[in-house]
Length: 171
Image (cartoon, rainbow, N blue to C red; front, side, top):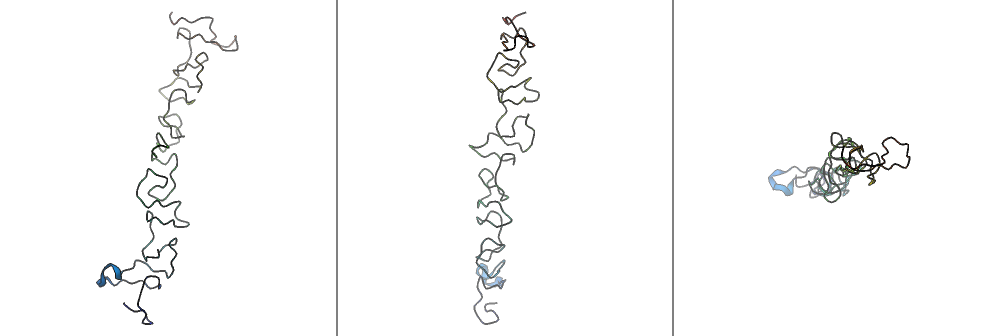
C-alpha cells in the first residue's frame, strides 16, 4: 500500500484511503476524499470530520468551538448556545431550565424570577404588576393590596375597588 497503481507514493489527498496499520499512525487514513476542503466530511489531514474538531462543517454544524464545553457560545453538539437550551452561560444567563414555563423560578429570558419582574411566580406571589408603585392593587412585596396592610391605596380613580381613605395597618 505504499504506492498507488501508478507507482506514485500514497499520500493524504490522493483519493485513496490507506489502511496499512503496520506502519503506525502515519500509514492510516480514516478517509481520503482527494481534496483539501476541511468543511466537508473528510479533513485535509485525512481524518473524518466531527463536531468539536474546530472546523465548521457546512450544512451539519451551526458552530464548532473545538471543545466539549457547554458554557460558551457553541455547545458540545455544535449548536449555538441560546436561552432555553438548558446550559447556563456565565455572565449572560442567571439560569436556564430548558422549559417554556414563564412563571417558574427561571423566566424564559433566563433570569431568576423576582418580585417586581411583572410575572406572577406560581405558589410564591399573589400578584406582580412589574412596577414600584406601592399604592396600587399590587404591593411591592407582590401581595394583593387590602385594607389593613399598612399601605394607603391611592388609585387615580376614586371609585376604584379597594380605594382607601386611610390604612394604619391594624384592624
